Image (cartoon, rainbow, N blue to C red; front, side, top):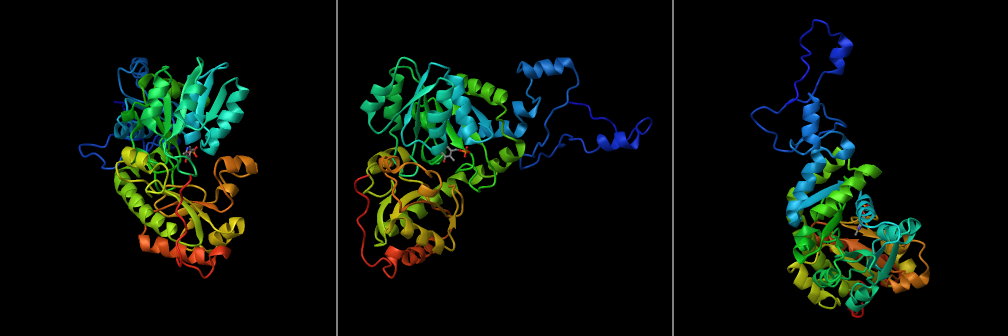
Amino acid sequence: MVKPIDTRAKHALGLGTRAAHAAVARPAGVAQPLVQPLYQSTVFRFNSVAQVDEVYQGEESGHVYYRMGTPNSTALEAAVAELEGAESGVTAASGMGTISALLLALAKAGDHLVADRHAYGGTYGLLTGDLPRLGIEATLVDVSDLAAVRAALRPNTRALLVETLSNPTLRVADVPSLVAVAHERDIPVLVDNSFTSPVLIRPIEHGADVSWHSLAKYLGGHSSGMGGIAVGRLDLIEAARQKVVHLGASLGPFDAWMVAQGLPTLTLRVDRHSANALAVAGFLAEHRGVSRVLYPGLPSHRDHNLATRLFGGRYGGMIAFSVKGGRSGAEGFLRSLELIAFAPSLADVRTMVSYPVATSHRGLPPATLQAMDIDAGLIRLSVGIEDVDDIIADLDRALAAAPAGRGSSAAAPAAAEQSQ
Ligand SMILES: *Cc1c(COP(=O)(O)O)cnc(C)c1O
């Protein structure tokens, strides 16, 4: 225990000194706070060199300097590792900070990575832009084709990257089969679990080496804190932690604290997101202003059976659908929403929509968009926890206002998505 300076011993201490040392954190006393306090301190104070040695050597628990971790980030790491059934966890300033640290820990110049060609835009940019400059090459494949994944693996492949649900078209990754293919060659599998959360799938239980998240998505759930976390094999997590510390990508205590406020309601939220999304997907599939709906919970989705097997009967809150009328249809729809926010993120308690061709996939050539199955009418819908009738009413109103849907609300069913 650090001995506090006794600011009441008035003898030699001036007012300036007393002010500087006032309000020092003290132990909570016999009754502990119910909510973890926010430790907004960049540094921790030691009594002796021996005490510093003990903390550095792991003989005593403690923190040193915030870039190396704080009580708030450590608590979050332990909590998410436990929820995912993982040995260890490391946080970073964002999801991208996390995957950057993981990949730089695993690969060096001359090494190779394999990832899904539908990878999240930030990950895609890292793999195709930043890492090649460092001599780390990536092959992008369709991970639903196990033979293609196997063929892409090389002796110098250091990781296979997959996403539980792809963005924005919501393909489901067969995590157990992908793990089996990669582990034949002792290649670690890193699973982006941001779209599903440990409520739907715990990749570590399927043999994955690392599960990672953007904390701004379901784990935080309220769009108020950012961050990233990776949990999994101790050696990989510790190697990533060293990169986070060296590259200065650490998670600040306030964001760690904000995100932690989301965890107690995680299962409640994901249950409600899933129930609402299933109802909304059913509504959209019947709407004549909509040309297709992609939701793993619909029997028409090509990965429905896989999703049922992996996600335990819930399918999450993410839907993609195409508004008839292409870009002008989508623009009219987005302009006419009242309750639902047009905001390019996801997993919030409030329902929100994104428009991939103008946000996450902006500026990609038409051929690339087509290969990714992204058309000009495609909307990504993150279904919130509101009363589902209100969500559906807002969608209905906005679809009726879109040029192709005008005056045609739910009059005749559109073909539910079949081919994707
Ligand atoms: C948001 C997101 C990321 C990136 O996370 P940031 O916290 O924005 O850096 C990575 N993967 C998926 C699937 C995401 O949705």
